[in-house]
Image 1 (cartoon, rainbow, N blue to C red):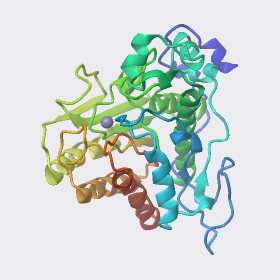
Image 2: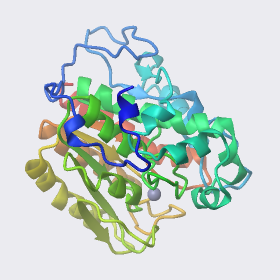
Image 3: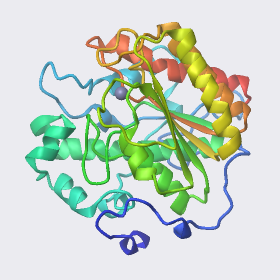
Image 4: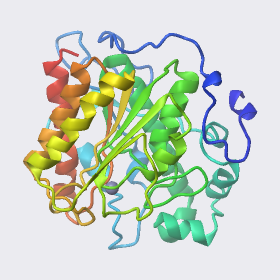
Length: 359
Ligand SMILES: [Zn+2]
């Protein structure tokens, strides 16, 4: 509908004029409303205050990659299971996206030709190779899985606007471009959600904070011409992608950085962006491939450093009155339990900040 007017081959950047003038329904994150998309809304505690929203979709880990494949497709399921199994969350606070975005909706930021090829499982060899999932890329399960992640990322953002904070068990496909995927990313959930919120959510300014060890190159390219989106990428300078894009602000780091130096770099740039850009929402890609033992990272951040980073980011944003939607981003390790625990620093920190900030 609205989107059909947007077509245009590679219309990557939503015109600001398309944004509805509705006032942002964010910032005073009311803690009394609950999402209509929640899979369940039963009370989880004796108080009326709803618990931290956590978004998950069973499709996140549905595709089966060949044994030994580097991408940890099953870790999203493991994160969800461990959050529940350890009693950190309960089923009542898990929100499942009610539907998957259509290609017409995704054309807000992606090329219709690319969407048609991907959705019909006929993507050409060259683009399949660049994505890195091999033949599995041309399967309906992976198509649905990819779209479920986009849906989950947008839902997390909407819940964050409503409650002040929300976290996902996946998200952060920041290497995807408008007309091609790259580095295990096919559709750019962050760019889509940011553009969607400007076009349809009544927002004027969204910050995409990308602390994955790899630069958010696709996100930077897909948001470059949108003054309502600020892309901040703090990443290992020598790491993938070899050819970097230009974010609103890039903070390239040297290899081998340890906790204190890494955290100082984040602490140095984030407050300034919050005060100058004044975002109404932060989409936070909390990639854990900054970890010292990550297979693809080149930094040297410890488990404790990871937790310190999540607390620093959430506390800084929430302290500035800005809602945060948190996504797990990248992370690479053979042991899925170990990897899941690294990602869960985000969820643990969010639970703590939810309480500390009285959300
Ligand atoms: Zn990464």
